[in-house]
Length: 252
Image (cartoon, rainbow, N blue to C red; front, side, top):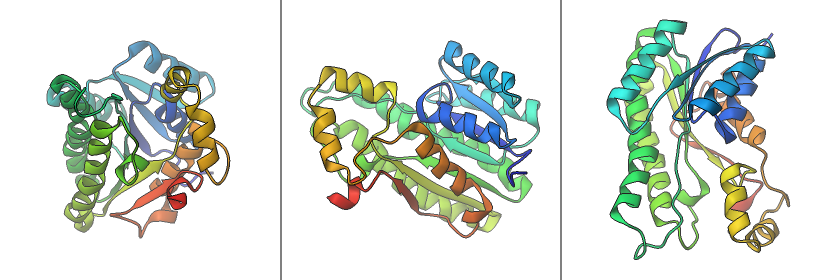
């Protein structure tokens, strides 16, 4: 029996990629999973497949950039499951464009989803966890917070901001038994990355040459890191980041 069994996970961006893998992994451990995503089709698909596998899941539509939408979604989670033990703030968008080519709308959209969206989710979930006398918040940052590439100024700014936000929020929440940490995924086999490689065929070879473990991460690799941070194995871990990148950042 998993120590996480019967707990409740809220995962944003849970309809695809790393969020989907996290939803499936936690559900297999007996966790009740609230899948928050703006894409109803993919969110419902993940919910149905988890249920067919014997797990407990519920899809809730959300626009994480909207305070009203996030508030409504968290209320729906509580109505369904009555508590929230783990928040995985994972939803994000990415615009690959240099500073001088990026529009104000593209810049603001990344801030709204990646940074403000995480703030809005934490703002709604923290009072719930405080009433429960504990919980775990895991925020999806990125290696771009530490070491970026041309074309990622907006994305890197939001992911760097999330690391700073995590540290400050961890201090705010420590007295309430709420742990707050970041997960730092490396290059991961998702549709987002596949699309980038399709548009830039030489990029995959270049990237693989830089990764010491010589492969891309699978979404489940990152999900396992999230599960560790949510578990009792991490009960004394807060205000820090877990890097799951095959050694890419260590390479420099």
